[in-house]
Length: 261
Picture 1 (cartoon, rainbow, N blue to C red):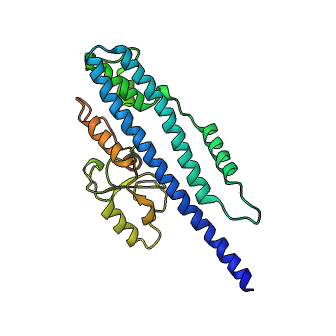
Picture 2: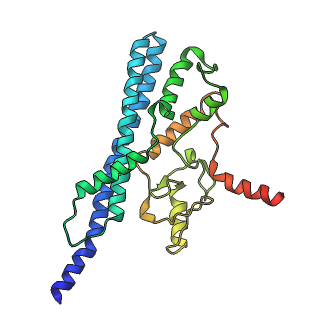
């Protein structure tokens, strides 16, 4: 009886240890993605300087390198998602688990459903636009409509640009954090107080988001500050201060319009 109880205890501890290991691997992988993003930002700045000096061939080589890095970053992102999936969903079984195959199958599934296209990636577009603006500031790039330029070059990875609790722009938050589950961003003090006040049933305060938040899964991940800095940089560009919209507000606006009708 004692041995049965001990075995059950070990089994119950396995998912927790697996989740902890997956969390560590995920964090390491996110740090790698952050370093790749930093490298692409630096490459864009170097390309602008080279364009000013008329070094068009070197600019093209940098652009090709950015495309390669985007592919690497996408691979890392898929690995991160696979790590999370295996860590959160795997349950112990009597037979030995082939974690390598489990992970590879999850990555293959993610790749099959991915719509990743480096040539249309916003970061590549920002690179090309920065180079174009060296000599053609204010002019649309060849083959582009003005509307396409606005929509593409202002895309970013931040799902909300204001904290739903404090109402402050994420670029002004003293201590920004992001939900691991729904990717929404909040002021740390405000969201932790909100979660505590809901006694385990803290639904994300962003309109229409169904995710239940947990304090330990609301963190300042490796990419968050980089993406906030990118948004600050984009908002400083001439004519761009009011272009980026917070689409989390659309649900509320739509509801109000329906009520008026």
